[in-house]
Length: 256
Image (cartoon, rainbow, N blue to C red; front, top):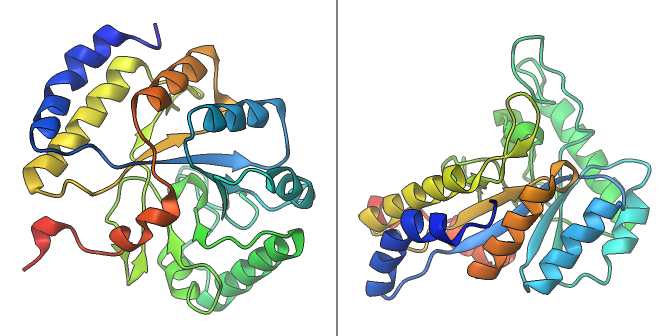
C-alpha cells in the first residue's frame, strides 16, 4: 500500500529518532512541475496543499493559458509560481537526453528567451523569482543570462545549492519513477532515499540543509495521491522563499 505506517517505522524510524535526540527535524519544501492550465489534477493538488497547510512552489510553463492559470492561483496564498523553462520543448539531439538549451546556444539568445518568458508572466499578473529548467537540465548559459532579469534563484534536482553565485534550492525526493512512463516510486524506495538524505545531513552536521519534495500532478495515479496525503500529514513543509537565504549559503561542513 502507498501509505504504509510499517514502512515508515522500519525505514525512517531510527533516523528520525536520531534527529529528535539532537532536537532537530528535517527541513522540507515542495515543488510541483509542468502546470500549464487549470485542470482537475491541479485542483486536487491545491486541495491537498490547503488541507495540510503545505506551501507549494508550482513550476508553470508559459503558453496561451498562462493568464487563466495565474488568475486561478491568485487566491492561493501559499502557492508560489515559478518559471518552468521558456516553452518546455526538448531541443537536444536524439540520444542526448532532454533540455531546451543546447551547447551551441549563445548567452544573448538565452537571455532573449528568458526575458521574453518573464515578460509573459508579468503580463499575466505573476512576478516569479525562481527558474526551474525543464528536465532539471540547468545549463551554464542560463546562469550567465539570469542577472538583469527579475529571477534570482534556480531549482534543479539534487545538485549543489549554489551555482556561479546564483542561489539554488533543489528537489531531492521524486514521488514518481520515470523509466517506462511516470508511475508511483513506491513507499520503500521513496523513504529509503529520504533516510539516506537525512543521514548525509546529520553526519555532515548540516541539519538545516533543505530536502525538496518533487511531484508532477498531471502524472499522479491513485497510489501517488494516497502517499502524498500521508507524507504531507506526517511532515511539516516550509515555504521556498523562507529557505532562500539558507540555500545561498555554503554547507556548514564546508565552512572554515
